Image (tube, rainbow, N blue to C red; front, side, top):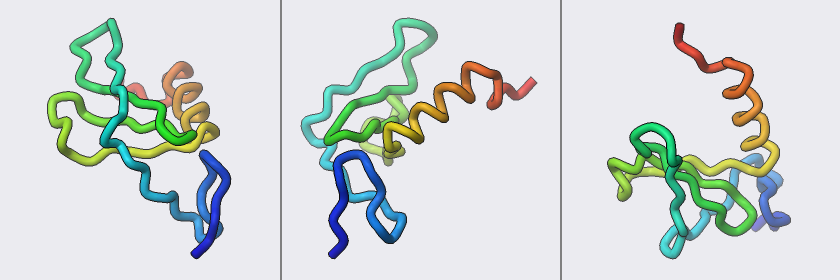
Length: 79
């Protein structure tokens, strides 16, 4: 089994399973708060707050930074 440093993908490019059981989920104070994030085991998890038992996306810190910077630059705007 490949080992990883915290917050980094495994050698095969897959991310380890992150235990979200005790995660402290945070919601934005703006909007409806449907998107929630949690900082767990060196990763950032994101889920739909309306469906908390559903799947969560897991980001490394570098991936999260790229996502946030892209969102700030309007990369994901649909208009």
